[in-house]
Image (cartoon, rainbow, N blue to C red):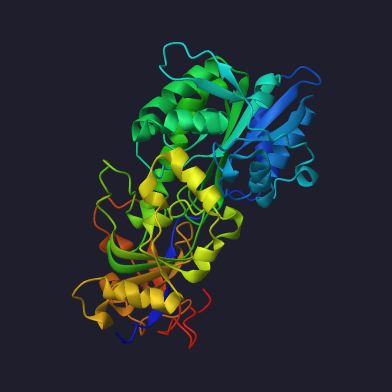
Length: 442
């Protein structure tokens, strides 16, 4: 079957852009503001997770320097559950891929999958902690606070989670994930309170990013205040998440997915897909077909979440490390997310497949959006049908032309997360694919 694929045009969304420039200074001042005292020479484990956090290496380095300034002897440990193939070397490589190297941060990385069993009290499940962290005199946890990709609750992804699944390594990830979403939503907060009361964790450093993937907040928090303060950070994140400009699509093209972008490669809060048995899917957005073109390099072949896509390219398929992917999938227990989508030879064929699978639509009127990834939604390509729904056309606005701006309050249905201010057309309608079926550079 042959038909013309709709042309697309580039648009820009405006979000709140407040962010921190002085990363190192802010991190240091936050830590010092807590007034924590260390015994000279105290061994301090700094637990670092496996997400693609903006400025992570700078925040870690400043933490190392400040702990040393306070008289401590800091070292780094990976705190990432089953990521990195659930191996010590794999987790070290994940950290190094984010720029957290011994040379840059000025501290040793001690990576091991060995854990110590902590008292579990009345929890009903076992509790584990990284052996190096447990043997240290103190532990500091660093993580981004954001809405979770598997559930929504009072606490989601952040400092409490890294205290449990991160510091507990593969053993604790298996222990919690065997309870499914109930474990993530209900057991993690309870387990975190227990761990904070039976471990050497002295503080957490919470990071929140704005809609442009920039560092908006760096907050050092005493261990006893972690839960209360994390709730505030999570609320900020909820109110400042990016979003797609419309709620119904025939095709969403995602240039890149991966563990550095979202825990499941593509953020379900953006795509509207969770794929967890027994859990209700989000009501919006409603997307008929999703195409994922490639896996990010810093995912190290971990394609957890590929099942959220309907179509991938041959290039994507060749990037998959199935052993690493399946270990992460099986640890999570959400097997739907690890299933193989239909593999197209190139991006154009993937689009042809997706349009054919979109039902009885007029192809020229197909609602299509193309994004770089689910973190970067400030600029995207949209088809004419989407542009019309937004209320714009390519004749009403170029770079810097105020006539091309449309207030999103008139576009979004009530309740859509995000505080977007406007949309602007910044290009002309163009073909997305070349003669070889490859998509034009973003």
